Image (cartoon, rainbow, N blue to C red; front, side, top):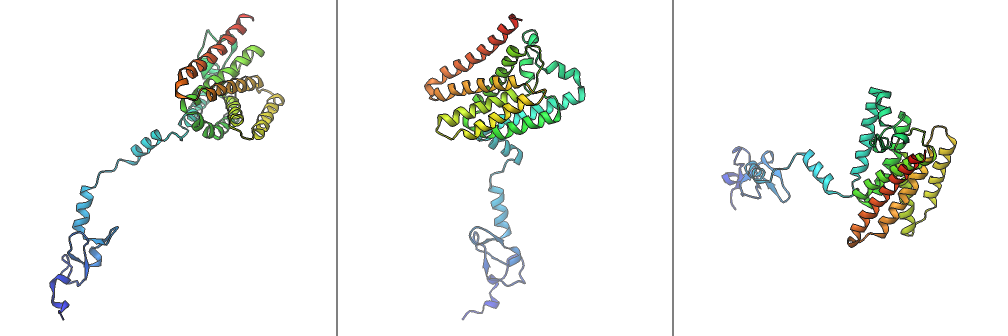
Length: 277
């Protein structure tokens, strides 16, 4: 038999006084437990570990990788999060600057064409913390379901055109009432959900109950522009009906034209209502 105690190959190459029978899986040298690093298969010595790390591809910083994964993942409701962030930032600015800014953002039908930015700014401005909180909570819940289903561009078009649809109803029914808030656009999303559920054979009873309760609240509570809720709901349902009937790639130009057409019709309704005042 071989005397293992006298064989120098059985001692750690980094610690000659430590007898060991552990071999590096890569280079075959003897290493003691202190010098060994567990690998997927066997153990490695410090030099082999350092060499492997030097040859490994450098990982990008977490922020870059996270940003790229966010960009490449179509299921993440980026537009929803962006709208929520924008609404919060606008309200912070309203809180700091007061009525001077709010009066510049609010929608007032007689100024629809003299100051057309109000058609958009009124959708992201809010009148109180509770108003902001309820709308953003609704947007967060509905948007996470709806944005991946429609796609980001169609979802953004739904928010904007649905919101303008709500303003068109205000311009026709109560043209002298200033309004602000995203609730018209949120009701457009409820209209979109109803169309999608009915189109694909789902049970629409729950969404109808939600819409009914919110409409009743709009009629009962003072200071709520129920006209914008109805207008947004109709515009959102009509736009989504177009989306589901023009789903193929060949129909994409028709879908774009029809979407733009609804926007033009809503602006025309506002113009006619102002001409009749």
